[in-house]
Amino acid sequence: MASTTFPVAAEMLAELLPDDEVLIDHRRVDEPVDVIVPLMSRIDAGMMDRYRPRLIQQFGVGLEGVDLDAARERGIPVANVAAHDTGNADGVGEIAVLHLLALTRRLAEARDAVAAGKLGEPIGMPLSGARIVVLGLGAVGRAVVGRLVGFGAHLTGVGSRDTAGLSDEVRALALDAYAPVGGLLGALDGADALIVCCVLNAHTRGLVAGPQLAALRPGGYLVNVARGPVVDYDALLGALRSGQVGGAGLDVFWDEPIDPLDPLLAENVSVTPHTGGVTTGSYRLMAERVVAGIEGVRR
Image (spheres, rainbow, N blue to C red):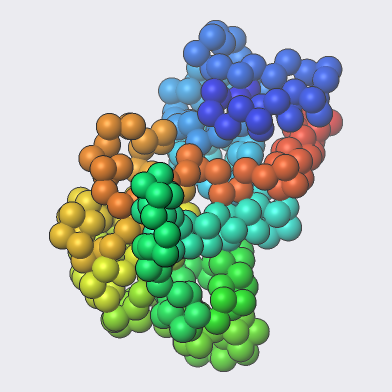
């Protein structure tokens, strides 16, 4: 059973499971199902009791929408698809660079200049020599770093582990510096941009707030391809309005889909509708992994 979000995922599952019934809209289902595929929907205890699934199988990595305690209490297995070998992380890494370029090269203003018949403006900021902090060095963070190295940016990685024993990893990623999460504020001091790639959990919720945004150079940029709540909404809106943050690139939001009238969208933001990992290559591989989980239930 899939939700109405991420329709291509549901279409691929229906194609790969021709003998099964793939139900797109859970609101029209009143009987038990074998498998729930959340696709960013909230799967709570009430939904588990209503549908009594034998498996909750995410189409992707994030499980923050699933009440894991409730699933554990009911003996319902919960599974996801790792990002590192499906192309998902590569897709998210690419969209992070897309947003960063849209901001630093002022794409929205450039389009306005074309419409006004102008040439040679606006002036952009080069990524070569820019100081960029990448928060989170999992599969997505590594994909971002690998792509930005080619631009000649000076990269600082911020990860969950202490600095001890990380020298080889830093060299392998071609980072200029590494800091543990506790050193995030210092790493951001005067940085040109912060790219958020970490998982959302109790420790990272609201991790990027007023002090972190204020540590960027005035007019610096924020890109979030992780989860919306890693960044404090009010702090970001205030920093955009004051000009402390010159622009934000967002592929994820606090409530999804974001309200088209959300005041954040009136600021200098580059937005995409959570499409970082939505590519033909990664979706096919993820669908095959999901089907493998479903076949396991069948067996």
